Image (cartoon, rainbow, N blue to C red; front, top):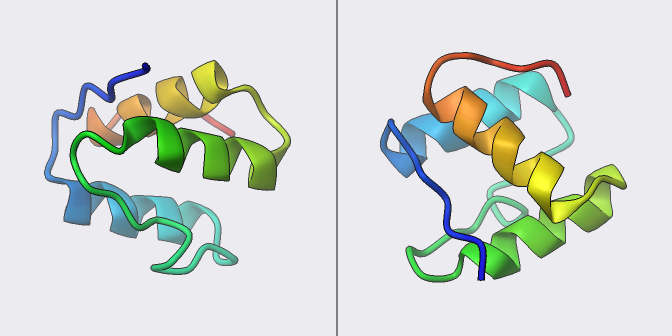
Amino acid sequence: MDRLNLKSPWHEVRERLKENDINLTDEDLEYRPGDDDELLERLAGMWNKSKRDVKEYIESISGNEDKAG
């Protein structure tokens, strides 16, 4: 199981993700600690990227590094 290593609270990360992709909804970004895999799989399917790429992107957003998607 892939665990997200977030440096910012999820609500802040979620808002940054929505700023970067206006098509994302709160439902798309529903996340509870421990359900990391579910979130990563959902976003990987939406973005046509690997779970690893999605995880790295989310972690970069949480660390204010904002890697381009």
